[in-house]
Length: 90
Length: 271
Image 1: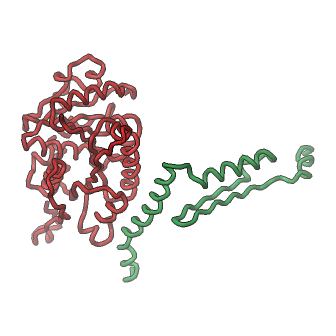
Image 2 (image 1 turned 30 degrees about the horizontal axis):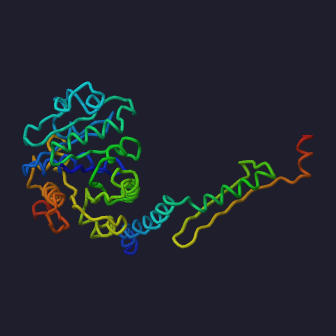
Image 3 (image 1 turned 180 degrees about the vertical axis):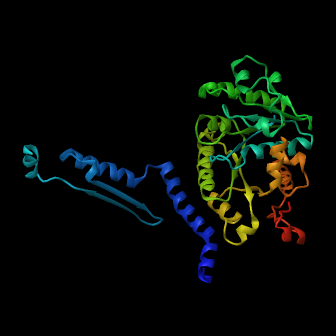
C-alpha cells in the first residue's frame, strides 16, 4: 500500500457527512411533499400504459438524486404494431 | 408535575436501553423520584439491564388492561430507593398497548414522579410512536455512523409531527446523545465527529458517551454504569448528561480515553 492510499483510507468521515447531507436534504423535502421524480415516473408510466401494454422485462427505470439536480431515465421497448400479427401466428 | 422524557433512536442497538438506565439512575441518585418505563413489548430488556429480571411479576400491559395496579407493577431498585422500573410485557400481541391506556399510565406516573423515562423500542412503528406520544422532552440516541444518523433524522421528524405536544402546537424539547464515540478515530477522520452529527441533525447536544468496555461490563452485571462504576469515563459522561437534562448549564467536553504507558505497551484499553 502506498502513502496516497493510506491518506485516502483515512478520509471516510467527510464522505459519510456529504452522503448524509445529500440524502437527508431529499428525505426531509419528501416528508413534507411527495417526491417530484417519483410522481413523474408514475405519471409517465401511466400515460404510456394507456396506449401500449408495457412488458416489465423491457422496461428500465433509473433515478439519480443529487443535491442540485436529479435525473430520471425511462427506457421502454415498445413493440411495433406490424410485429404483433407475426407474434400471434407463431 | 413530573417531566416525561422519551429515549429514542429509530435504529436498534445504538444504546437506548443502556442510556435510559444510566441517565435514570444518575437522576435518581440526586434524590429525584424516577420511573423507567420499558415500551419494548415482546422484547423487553430494561429489566435485564437494571438487574431486576427475576423480580418482574406484573407489567405495563397488565396495568393498562386493569389486571394489576400500577403500584403492584412498579419495581423499586435495590440500590437507589427513588428509582423504579415499569417493565414491558413479553406478549407477542402487537396491539396490547392502547393510546388511551398508555396516556392514563403516563399521567399517573407524572403526578407521582419527578422524571418518567420512556425507553422506546427500535423502529418507527406503533410501539415507538406510543413511547414518544406523551413526552415533554426527547433524548435521541445516535451513534456516529451513517445509518444511525439517518434514522435519528427520521425520528426527529416524527417527534415534530406525531407527539401530543407537537399536535397542540407546542415544541417538544429535543436533545441528541451521541454514544459509542471514539474521539481518536473521529480525530483521524475515520468516524463522523460531533460537529458533523450536530450540523446534520441541527439538534442540541445532551452529551457524548465515549466507547467504553465498562458499559458492557455493567450490562453483564445488571447495573446501570452510573451506579456500578461512577468514575468510569462513560459513567461520568452520563452523569453530566443527566445534569444537563435537569437544566444545569454544563459545557460538553469531548471525552478522550486516556491511555497510560503500560496500557499502550500491552495494547490494553484504559477507561
